[in-house]
Image (cartoon, rainbow, N blue to C red):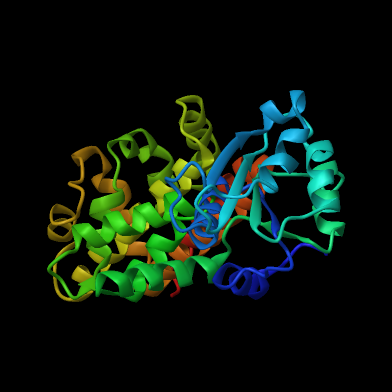
Length: 343
C-alpha cells in the first residue's frame, strides 16, 4: 500500500479501513501529524483515558523490547470494547518491532504510529507503505488551497465571514504547522467575537508585533523604491536576529497598512492625515519614506505586493534553505516596482 494522498487521507480519517489496522502518520508538519493522530485515536477507542483500551508506547522503549508492540496489539481489553496502541517513533529504528504486527495484525486493535519527517528510504516508512494491512498518511506543509479550507472551516465554526483583503493577509501568515495555524485562526475568531465579518484591521491587530520596529529600515526602503538600500537594510535586519519569515510577515502587515492609508488618500484625506490615522502609529522619522510610498503607488499595486509577499511566505516555508534568498529577492522586486509610477 503506497502513501495516501489528499482526498484519500480525508476519506480514511472520516472512516478508517478496518482492513488496515496499522496506520503510520508522518511528515514535516508536526502539528498536522498530531491533529491526525488525535483524530485516529478518537475514532479507534471509546475512551482514550481508559488504560485497558488505549496504550501509549515510546519508540525508544521498543528498541529494548521489540516484542512488546505485538503483545499489546493482541491483548484483549479487560472489559471488552475497542483497543488502540499509539507508538511515538523517535530517533531509533522501530521497524523490527512493527514487522511482527504487520505479519500478524489484530482485527481488534488499531496500531497508530506517530513519526516525524521520514525519508523515502526510512525502514519504517518503506515497511508501512508496502504492507497491505497498513496505511501511510504523510503530513506536508499546507498549500494555499489547504490553508483556505482551514480558514473557511474555522470561520464557519465561529459563525464569521472574512473580508478578501483580510483573508489574503491572514493566509500569508499561516502554514508550516497545522495546529499553530488553527490556533492563530481561532485566536482571530475570538478577537472578532460579536462581529459578523473579520476585517483586515482585525488580522493586523491580532498578529502585529512590537519587534516590527527593528525592521522599519528594510520595509521603508522596499516600499519607497530605494533599491540601493534594500540589500543593506535587509542584512541589518538579519544581523539583528530577524528571520526571513518574520521579515516577510512584517512586510505583509506594512503593505496592508499602506493599502488602508492609500484608500484614505484617494477618498480625500491628505497624505499627512492618512499617516496619522494609520495603525500602528507611525514614528515621525518614517514619514518621508511612507509618504513616498503612498505618492508613488496605487491601491491595486499594494494588493499585488501583498499577494507577492503571500506567495513568498509559502515558498520560504516549503524551501527553508532558500528562505533568505526568497525574502530578499521579493523585497527587491517590490522596490523596483515602487520606482515605477504607473498603476
